[in-house]
Image 1: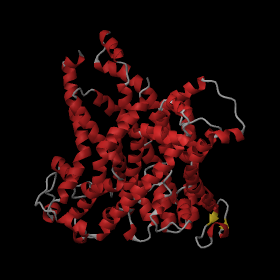
Image 2 (image 1 turned 60 degrees about the vertical axis):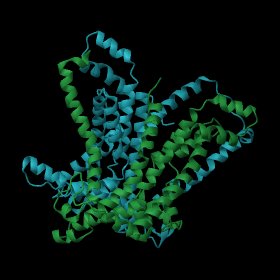
Image 3 (image 1 turned 45 degrees about the vertical axis):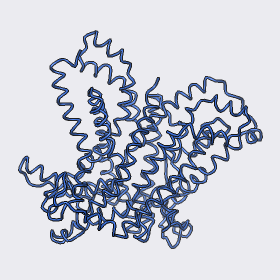
Image 4 (image 1 turned 135 degrees about the vertical axis):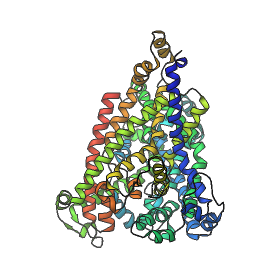
Length: 289
Length: 327
């Protein structure tokens, strides 16, 4: 009974302390952000706000939602996330299903896909390609280049592989085609897998900021993450060269905090689902029987 | 993301073994094969189209690395200059500095990124209260899913000279404020620690799963033999995690030139270029901001080629050491 010994109790005390501190460190910055977004300007510049709003007001949120640049880019983010996820899932589930079968040429096709995980053209050639296809400035520049992902394909293929072959064989005998089997056996039975991969793709689209800066020539076309990057990060880099008073005159910290928090909210909202699926998905594969 | 693939491929390996036990059917001629399996080929086509355009398409553009590329002349009109761009990589101080910084930051990230999740997983496994354990897990996985823009926004505020962390430190020790993001000697540490903070929880998942898979009778047997808990951890828990540790450590070899563009781009500034500028940020500035497309492509190609060799070696090693396969 090791956990009754004195030494283990001491260890246990330190262990709880370390792990709870680590867990709090992952959560407190977000709480700080939330507190700032509801606090008064004076309280923030005076560094009085920690994890509870001081001088409670909702001005930052009114300002944010009255800013048409913010709401506009939010709409663009929603559009790219929905369109991008649907498109990716369409092309990935079909290919994933096909590649979970044995057929002649399967391995060659698989290598065409897997090679993209090993080698890529890099930033400049991709930029030149998107520009020369005439996609620059259009929302499709944010959707099409990243629609295919080899990791997600392999993930889906593996989910399809776990479905018993006997089901498919029985359906074949009843005269079902590959398409019918795919739609009415494989898709419904691999819902957890589909949910995992779609959630990953959705989070990826929502968080993606660099392609917006690269391909959107007009800042009013920026998706939310790119908009946030210009507001939060670029102004900071500029402020390095400014005096204290100039910095104070810039966008208020409470507004920045509100903008960061609103853009993180969708991630926090899907997080419970995300967690349920990704842990299950990983554990399913990791523990060998 | 990588971890999931690593994990699920384990089942994949088992499937493969089972499949190879069955007798392979003799190859059918193509005509028969297409007649029978045409829907399968058809279903691959959409993905193939996307891959060929958006993954293989840019590889054509790599010829820019051997050109003095001018956007208005295009790939066919620009002058060919052989290996000049590559020679310049090793002449420009900025480029060699960026390569060195990349190596230092990436290797540090890999080392702490392997050790800390292992230790944390073992520690978390010792927590017997299921509620506490679940809550800790829920909280530490969260930062992995936040964008670096969000995290950078929070860090800029918290790590500022008059920010929360500096206040906390000066209350405790009474020293001068520390410039975490503007002091070249501290920047790399800030980068490595914040990356660890964001990803250690997610890295733990895989180890927690392999600990959970240990047969409880091993622990019972060890306990009957009089092993202390520390000895059990050392001689039962760790060895059972070893295959997973080996796979993850070898696969990380492939990311030795990936210092994390998203993170550094959002946190660095001209004050810390000397220690914080990496290959990807250098390529971005020299080509997209300064118009040296050919040179930027050459630096990118150099990185891609070295990474390619390393990834191939990593996969081969992982296969040899732990029987791991990508598909």
